Image 1: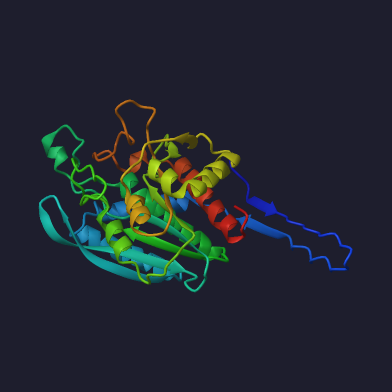
Image 2: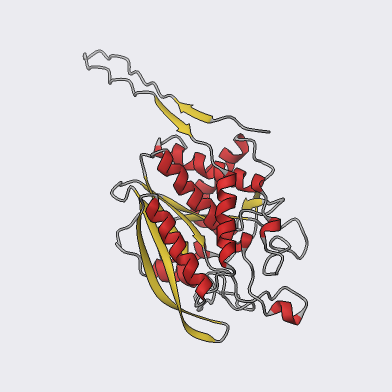
Length: 333
């Protein structure tokens, strides 16, 4: 069903009665209206298609470099202030692989800020395949990598057309998906996953950077997606998680944003939460209802291609995120 433009209006009218000592009543608070623009699922899908046209975006490859240049170009054309954070990653017995977090800011001088993030690399091996030849191939990464990037670039396009009274920061984390499959990332131990987020969290500039909170988008494009309240999100950003899931349910998306708790996942947001003062939640497709399955069935396999991407899922995630941003800008979330 096609949804018409959503308008959220919140009106606060406060009158204080005059008191016996003649004090003046404060002026009424002006009505504030927040208009939430439509999010384009078609646009997000096209951005995923573009990433897929490069091939797997494994750090250190020409495909990875080409995608990096494209992301920088896209965000620059949208008027964002763009920079890169270079670092070296170690994975799959390789050392010192060139990697880069891409950072883009809209309204960089605005004091109130929200952080949006996704990882843009794709995994170098498909270890969940049963065939040894297929195992050695890099993951295509339509959902795991491509969907999060598609969502947040489309959000930037939405903001460019509909200016917002708030700063929005976009961080494209690199070398997220290159960890060792047996690495549990125990608390305090060196972790091979989310290397870009770890580097960013330890080397933030300026050090006083303090967004209200952050949202990570990971695996947000597959058919029949289910977004539960992930464990680290509830621990570190519980208030924001509850508000966003409540909003999504009020918007009629309770079949996607499941109002139930799920297990913690080691993802980029974990290290932002543990290493900075920024609360960050993860919108990620989890399957706690399926015994023995954590993620969607094509996770870290060759079938993570465009065939599993669903425009309905993109629409739901993108529209909820759009509503969150514009309601935050008007202090009505």
